[in-house]
Length: 121
Length: 106
Image: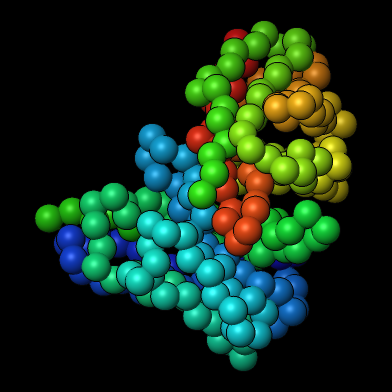
């Protein structure tokens, strides 16, 4: 059974930083790309970042480019998202998901339960 | 980036057919995916491409398309289908969700 468990969320002041982590099990982690998606209250889901299986390529939404950094450790079956220069509009529930590819492109097929990030003074 | 437009809410009576639309400059409509998110739960994939359903998703979930719109249909809607539904597509390394549709079954 695929399982993804996020951690690291919390309350942080504007301009602050936070590191989110996601530990995976139930599949061969090193063979899959991974992604982070967030659920913004009142606005819905937003894809924010992805990383390929060997970490050769990373992708970011314009809204977080230059502020967030995705990374992974295949030896530990984990993917991380470093959040910096946080803004109130980054307040969201952050999901880690497996990033699956087919002839139509990439999509998140299995999701964790999410970790909550609140940016407030 | 491009946008996918969904109605903010749809209501349906139990047993009826719910239809949720998704429109935008989607090049390959057969590649639009659909996610269901029940309150307090993680999203799950209900349609992934060419109107295919992942294992465990009931047959009452299906997708169709016209020239400008992709539609998720739920036939014989049940109370447990009440959830937010998001369409999703990708183009040029830009992965986009629609704003979501709240389906109310009452």
